[in-house]
Image (cartoon, rainbow, N blue to C red; front, side, top):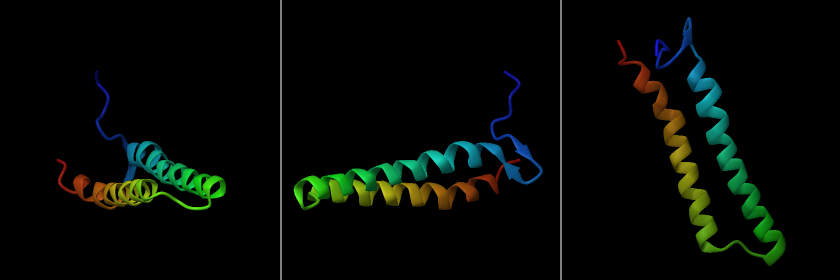
Length: 75
């Protein structure tokens, strides 16, 4: 369609800044908010909720940390 895969302005990557960061960080914040609400309602956080929060946080950290290394090898 004539659009670049990863639009850039100099070294600034628009896709990384506008799509990856806010969406993934927001996902973790929503998970934390849901865990806080569960603690408020039940007085404890279930193991399943704790595991979801941990695994999503690991996934997001991996995505944010390793996304930069993918761009180093583009031609």
